[in-house]
Image 1 (tube, one colour):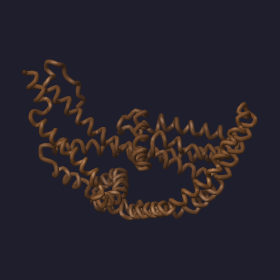
Image 2 (cartoon, rainbow, N blue to C red):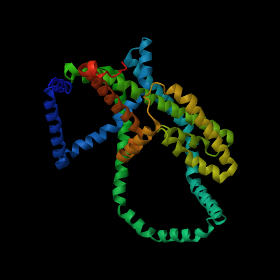
Image 3 (cartoon, rainbow, N blue to C red):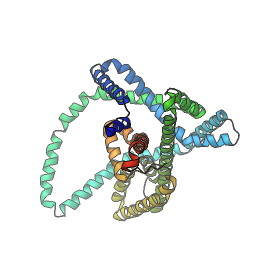
Image 4 (cartoon, rainbow, N blue to C red):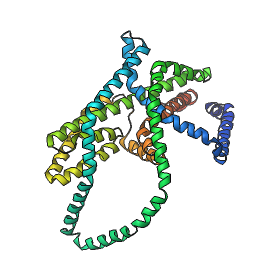
Length: 383
């Protein structure tokens, strides 16, 4: 009987029945929502419109807030620090775009025009290799299979054309959303940098006083984990882009600047990003010569070695420790659920879930030690 009473207190006492009733009500609400979800379509549109600029603003906030804090320590009022920083970055980006846009545009146009020829040459080389290898007896069967599939191409094109209007609408919607995000996110960023602490205080006041201290701790942990991850990942991606640009110039690879930019952008996504970035560079190198491919491999291995042993350990030191397999699984799941956005934001989202889960488990450990620790052994809690 004593053990039963202790277990009831451990799981929350009589409050557990209110908690169960609360979760049941949530389940009923979700079920009803699935039946009348069309009523909330305007709300879905509003959220999907607001979310992109807010996400962009939060990413920029984590990058720029340490600089604003530093300016504030130098006795510059926060609002003036924010204005100076935003104007300075806007001016620097404008100047950089004006200086580099012509060369980037020319290189990108040339790459877009030449890339089909690279693929064609690569295909011809592979065909020649197959015909002269042990796979030659199967070449004709493979060729006929491809020809048969190509005969179905007109029908597929017809299907795509029939869906063309819907595609145009989707493209127009995407362009509109992008323009709205670019225009509005600087204003959201300004108020986040200026009043970030006030937003946190206001949010805390929405919670009952009993839970404010725990909620504040969770917010602080999320802020540290997500902020350090975003800052570190973007710095690492930039360093990778710079190192690859230098390496590409040394080996004389065509389109070095454009390929380095692609690598820097895709490297924001850990593990999968660098793998995607090497593909266009490898195709260009193969068509150039086998020796160029060897030089590209040496550059890539050298950059990965520097990134893995010197850059990431020093820059990403404050981020959460996540096993590489966990990162890959998170990226695959988030990508399937939310597409490109899920791939980009999957790890920060996982960081938030992990912080909340870790804090709840910490509370569970303390509660267990309180009711069972003396006679059943205690959890070793890291404070």
